[in-house]
Length: 403
Image (cartoon, rainbow, N blue to C red; front, side, top):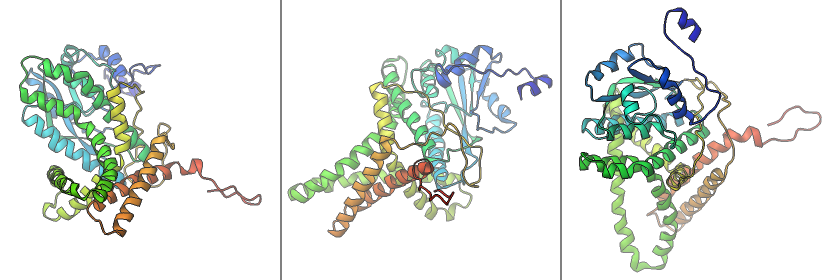
């Protein structure tokens, strides 16, 4: 392709590294000196920007303080499966509410790794691409903004891309994002607190932003602690008042629902008919998110402990419609200790749900039921993906059929 475009008198160069030093950040750093222009547009391989993408983004750089213009991600294969629909649901919340809200209030946002344009001098002034975290985009974003650069988020400019279609790919992507967020918090929190001439409100929002992946640690702790709380509730009746008082935190779900409702409604054409669908989709999203909490909490803890791991690329399949089985050599499907843990938690919370239903104690049944369905979904989805490799029926000598 590069050779074809060269014949059309386009100054293009295909760079292929023979090592993975620094992973994506290392590749971006290696390529930067060959970039002759003032602006650097970055797209992952699965992104399909519109032909007028640069015309829609470059004019915002007329403001010399703008270092990055980030666009909203679209979803080429949103309708591929329930898994992709739930990912789109969550990502729309991030882009429509989180990115848009922070940017409109003048708080720090992040370049999302792709679908955006950097001013080259902004990259170099902030110290360039560094690979000591798994989220080099978030890291450089904060270093640039702490240096005084401004970011611009464009809600109405969409860069379509492919969502992961397998549970293994989604768990790998989530692990990288959650661990990278924790690594960036560990790396940047002192600078956010001590850098001069920063509004205190930006410090608060910045720390909250970098800390937000830790929510999965609290979800995991809350779910595990709910089991001994039931024992305390049964054994020490005098403490039930305090347990009931804790139910006030259910209000957090209402605020979360409002957050996603605004994002969901913004993307629906028939707004008046969408609330019922939203409730169903929100419950599905919340349930599967709870099922991913073990995977994501381990990633966050690794990030805070400084445990390093390789950058695992998210496998893509170039599909928009589900037409059956597809393969990607980077999609590593396996039964890990985390998968075993998810299966155990599925059994634990399933037993607890049934036990409480039998005894008529319904207070925590909805919560434990969601955990059961969430962990069960993640566990069996993973199991189904790897089944052809580990579950086989030995055929009779006269048969060539196996399962």
